[in-house]
Length: 128
Image 1 (cartoon, rainbow, N blue to C red):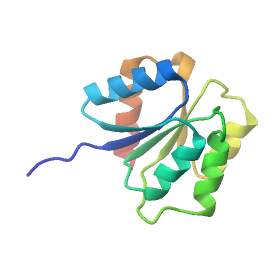
Image 2 (image 1 turned 60 degrees about the vertical axis):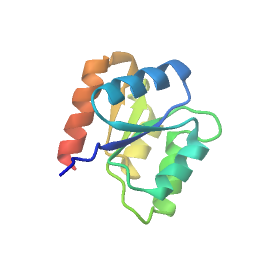
Image 3 (image 1 turned 45 degrees about the horizontal axis):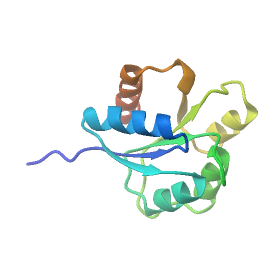
Image 4 (image 1 turned 90 degrees about the vertical axis):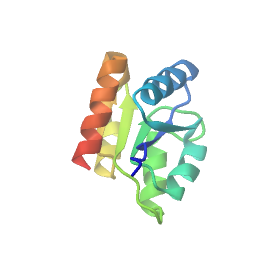
């Protein structure tokens, strides 16, 4: 019996954050797939099968809110786990709207350490 690694989709355009988060998550034993922007993020999410989706709110082509709207209008056939927004704009109306449209929660990128990222991810996966 082999325990499958939990699959996380990281939708993030910032090179530094993308590499840092991917490395931290992989070191913690997660399987990480990366989408560079909202458009490719939507394509991957629609395939489904992710245990957790980490979604940057501010990206070129399509931001987090556009991704959430696209998914809610056209849900994936294979269910995904919770969508967690990554933002520095906690009081932002778009964050609130994304939460209303199906995102589960958010983490504040500027406040979070790699250790806290893993704690948060584990917490969101347990709630699933």
